[in-house]
Image 1: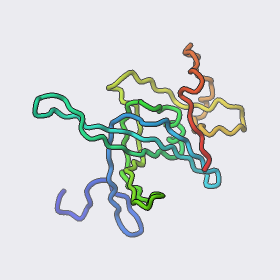
Image 2: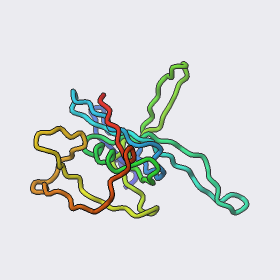
Image 3: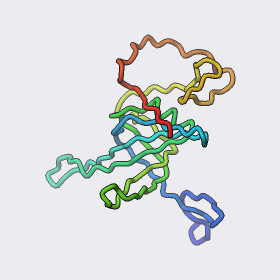
Image 4: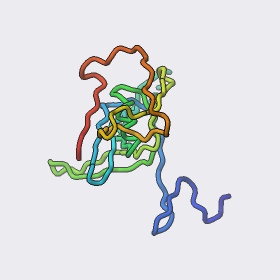
Length: 181
């Protein structure tokens, strides 16, 4: 009910009080292959990639026109990072939901720079633009072998995935970059 002291929208409680986050949903196309970053010292992993979103509108002549393209850096963390790195490729149509952040820094030329970032809570292939098939991630490596793309699987889900008969991807295509930070 309006008029109460209850904040509207997404809220996180902090020691300083309620914190309001700006949550966004963006649909667009992936601009680069995701890079998986691993920091073993802090037991953290994250994936970053860029998304371009171009507004389309009908101009005064009644024709569809492309508007300005906005670029966002998307970051996914922990288990989601590995799933995104394996699932998303440059050129894929995606829908991303998450917290909007601004990263500001000074470039080597002394100019102030800014990037729009989305701390992703959800990343999905846009099924309105093509067929999508979902499969759960299951670790298939030998026991004890480190796998930077591994995700926790439910107990009893160790069986290998069925062979789909799909041809292997050509060398270099669909490859993911592993970056240690």
